[in-house]
Length: 249
Image 1 (cartoon, rainbow, N blue to C red):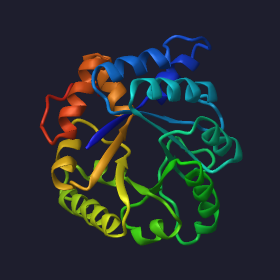
Image 2 (image 1 turned 45 degrees about the vertical axis):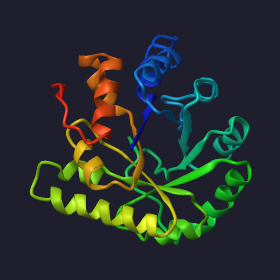
Image 3 (image 1 turned 45 degrees about the horizontal axis):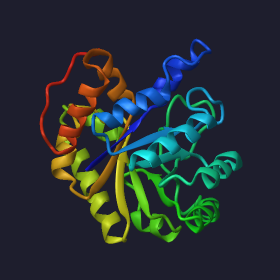
């Protein structure tokens, strides 16, 4: 399981003072120095964290470092144009509800199939691998039908269930979704609210997952552990190893 580090929260902290500190690029360099397999940015329309220039800079850093760059976002025209400009290794399409704090649901298929098909075809035509954000209780075959290469399984329900009586059922649901996606010829990614507590079990029990994208929890842990040590612990968790968890709340 590969780890792609989402650096949106570094950009959010920078934006809070209107300057250039902390630098998203410097944070990315340290993440890669610690062994992360890739970099992720989610560019939202309101520019509340990542900006277009961040995408351009990290795409070049990833290319020169020999790692993958994953651009996340919705299907608005400016994001698709930027994707076709910078040619990320992976474009992860995520539905957006106006006013949401963070992503909280996957695509509604087949209802939104026609919206996705055109954008997926454009991206794939430019040589970009396309992943789409999906709830684990949806039919994975439909993601293949719209032309996606991969699905990113939405893992917040699993994270909320972790440590409760619902944990086994939530894990089983993700495992079934991952198997169904693989059977449909899709690669499997996962993300949202994954952390050092719940990630090792996911790595051990859902071996189909190729990549996880983690930002919020990883940056919160980095406040205590430092960025490079945190990345090393998340890499161990991606291998299914139980690791010491810092207290952050």
